[in-house]
Length: 69
Image (tube, rainbow, N blue to C red; front, side, top):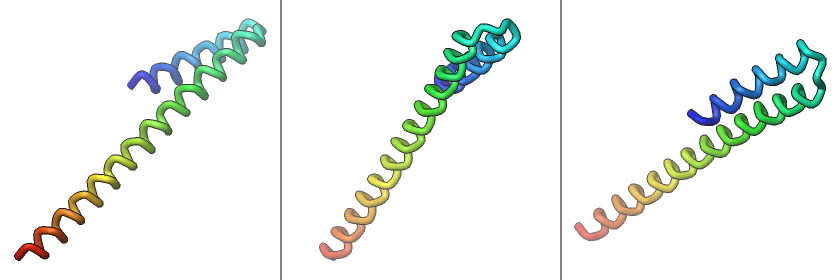
């Protein structure tokens, strides 16, 4: 959720910089937006990795249970 807020804040700051002609503010806004996108991608990757690990654990657990029968 914070990632989306960073992106939104960055877009607003970038737009304000464009309107006022302030290149520094525009660049800061672009950086904040990109930072939010990167954080979001990292969190998505983390969630995917955690899901894959759980899938492997479940598979190994099932295999072990079948061997014990």
